Image 1: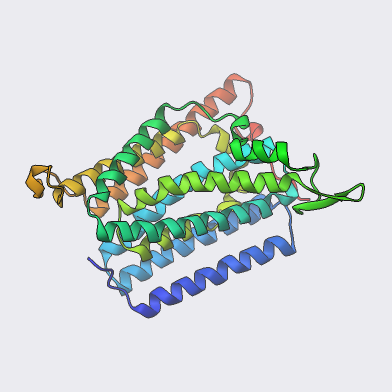
Image 2: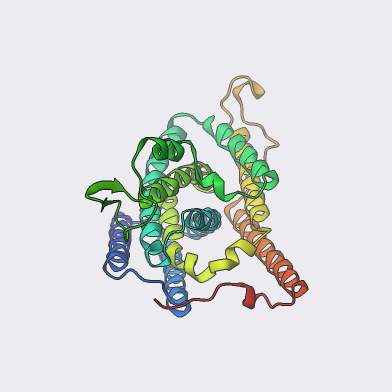
Length: 341
């Protein structure tokens, strides 16, 4: 079922989103700073409000089904982006990136994520159009990812040093200190790379891994490339402000990974059911659709996503508060506060 939206809306939306991202990029590089709690909160609220307005416009100009698909896709990608953000926190800590320049690193990371996801969206759309059995592959991949997410140990800061980065450290002249946000600097009259290059490569490779997870997940909700791409853009917009807003709270969302794992598992099951329902693989039921395989509707998916994230977040906050109380503190006292620089 094709999205019943006017072409001018789709083109206009992409133009407006591009302008917003460019404006955000300009602000970061013109005035690098650590945003206050109030500033970060206002920006996050603005981007969330923008996504809800966009969903409302889709409802008015299109229909409820596709507005629901956007909301479900956006919330799924948003939850995965928060998980991505947690790894960003580890990378920033591992390489001791000055807080003043963390915004620049984050915006570059977001741009890399958008480019990678755009590429995977195009590839995924082509695969779905030409090979209906790809839903079996997507479903199996998400089921594996969900189980791995649930049982994997907590990431260690040393994992930020992947093979590529270790290779670069051995074969390139990289300084031990930052020089603002520069990638290269002069030391004793010689040009050398700064740790910023390593940080950006670590962020980029992390984005690649998360793009591999997120694209099959959202294609389990909708096959419209327009919805898939805009849901990803809205999920990534405001991510850098969310990084500063949540701060140390991210490390205390202990059960978040289980909520995300449940969502991925649910979408994986949904994809397998869809593949069975529309089956064309000759060795499964003689190439015919499997009658008992249910089609899970968009609103059920949306409900599962919202409830999963809400339960995981509330459970994490309750545990974090109890742990803080055992140590004789309140949760607020253990979370880093914002200091204007």
